Length: 316
Image (cartoon, rainbow, N blue to C red):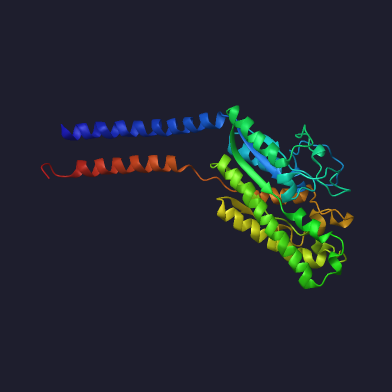
């Protein structure tokens, strides 16, 4: 009698397990069916700039497009809503406070008019970033992913300042060190805002490549390597401090600076192949959800326990 009841219970558990796992999968599908948003902020790299011949643009290109496509592949083909706010020539300071508006290529000033997401050219990227978070939240959309790439233009500003290359190496280093202090302060402000507004978002911080390794005649070639690697170290440290993932874009370009950037024509930006390299670094495998593993493990353990119990002598 007892043996018969135990067999019946086991049969019931065997039927129940697939049903519960299916319910979890269905629940995940329901969540996935909700509208998710990928928000990208930064400079011309985040804008997906190449040879300046494809502007204006909504910036859903370069690594932003590649990363959004990879998120779709993880979500049953459903692509996230992409809001890309990258601006040519943006520094960490102009990101927060704005600054002179220009064409982003000739003047070196931030150029929000090249990004069609800016309907008000007076709006700072930080202001629009916060406004988009508010509007997406109000619409019931989940901002699931955020990428940030800023800092390189801060270094360009100091390197292009009058008389920089006439300074002694010690004085050059002092100016660069001061700039790193500004970058750190500004990034801390941005990332604090971001984590306050979006504590659960998957946050990716991107470092920078060094195109000048293929252009030794450039005066920037002597300072670019150490400065960019120091900047990348700063960004990686911020990623660790704010629960983000740092993406190394320096290493993949080593030996490919000439083929995968436009530096041969004096342009530091990647080619499409270069942006594909960056996308490959951003993508990481998504493991099976622990919920399913725990469910299967718990019920498997329960079945084993019942089977052992059924083998015990009566009365023990």
